Image (cartoon, rainbow, N blue to C red; front, side):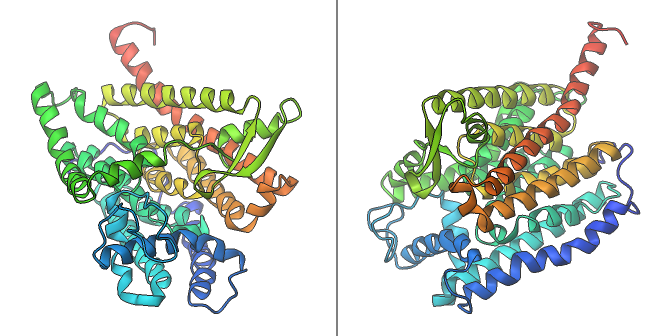
Length: 436
């Protein structure tokens, strides 16, 4: 792997490094202990942390259905009491959630332990890669701290595994290993479709010619195709096995309303004195908001975010600079744009944000990114599960938490953008369009 150019990075002896080395322990205890104690049954189901286990039970019914030989994505694929529900997640989520069936009735605990192990391995691999590339900041520690700050949601979803695959794709681009980058991000899409946000800059990066090492278009397209091949094979196998049920499941989650945790919903709530809104339990058991102009607001944020993702990805890809920052910008902008922003979606962003901060931006900006990333994660944990009832009832505390979290998300996009503008300015200077 080629060494990347590191400039004014956060030193290993900085107060932020020392702080991270201290706070990861209480953050880990806060995320792990209440959840595992709840999962083994020592606390009533009414416990707040128990709210996050719902998806694990959903995963278990799909995993047990597969273990029992049911046709995936078919009617009655899932086991009791979810046999009437359709399994909605891509096939890699189904496969990764399968080993925990060996624990039988202790599936939830086994699943969380499995995720914890996968996250620990991902952080170790990310840190080892950072050291090989010369990073003075422990990248693995930074990613682990940010993820642990999200709380119990970390160990009850697979989005963190997806996040490390996205960060791995950025590392592969740093080493000009296009096939590996496309492979990792395409497999991440098979964990959850939200990785499309990372797939856009990765794919464009691989399709645009490298200014330092140009190659013919056919070769670049062939590399992208080769990277996509394993994910395509997995998808095709499950599509044939399920007789098209996999595709139907993927499409069934497309039509969703405006989730109460999204930026567009925050804007609608902030201006609710002009256009009244109300919350309701909508499609797929997500809390949503409705109002006379909510749809227009959601469309505007989606269009603006999509434009930012595409333009940013193109500018970064043309220069072949700062791949982790390119991906972090795309994912963060997409999260600001999406009308569906569940708390676990942040887990895709945090590892690649840590990678960008530790290896591609100057020390001052890196500190800002890491601190704000930590605040975003802590606010997300506060919102879900602890004060989610306050949010859905439009109480001041819940609203203050979600408005603050989403505002900081926008700030993160703004902090990542100067790198984008910097590469664009360099290109303009090189072409003589602007003066130095």
